[in-house]
Amino acid sequence: MNYIENFNKITYSLELPDNKIIQDENHISDKDSFDLDEEFLLEKKITESWVLIFPELTNNDSKNNFIKELKSIGINSMVDLKSKGTVVFGIGPFVDKQMAEMISSKVNDSTGKKGLIKRLNN
Image: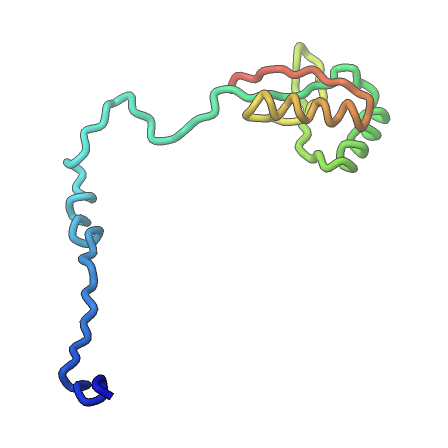
């Protein structure tokens, strides 16, 4: 009841915080604000990757059957690598060597084929 009698005396206020992003916008976009080293790279690059190769797959029929087996276990990233005048079938590339080892184990368990893990320099 006291609340209703004093309703016209109650003041509600909501204080919004200042938007620091808008205030600092000119400072952030000022091109003279940053001193970057000339060797500083603005993009990340992958310097090495790993691929699982199967050099024994030279016959197209065995290669096609192997590709079907790989697709049945969910592997779709396949590549043909040129090496010393021949084309070698591979899976990958993988950024992490441990991932390549895990996929190698999965392929070996499912298909009985053991691939070789090779490092690629990009």
